[in-house]
Image 1 (cartoon, rainbow, N blue to C red):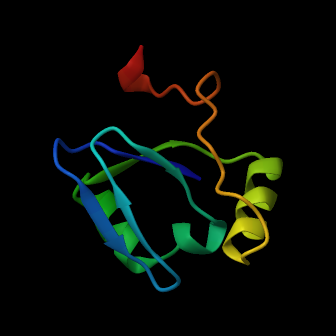
Image 2: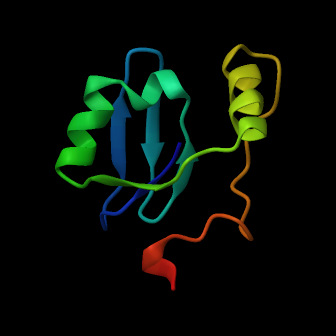
Length: 87
């Protein structure tokens, strides 16, 4: 799942398996396990972050590999990750 920091300030989310920091407007890919994390869910409830779109199977595989230490970070695909707030 792709999320976006929808605040005007940086957001830090301490999940069970990693801590992420997002600058305002920054987008990040999360694993299916992370999407179920209670801390992330709390941040979604207060709208500190918003969901942009589900990840593709390829993105999910690349993220899993990266989190295991075997691959590069998954980059935001600018041509495919436009959310409703960006027109």
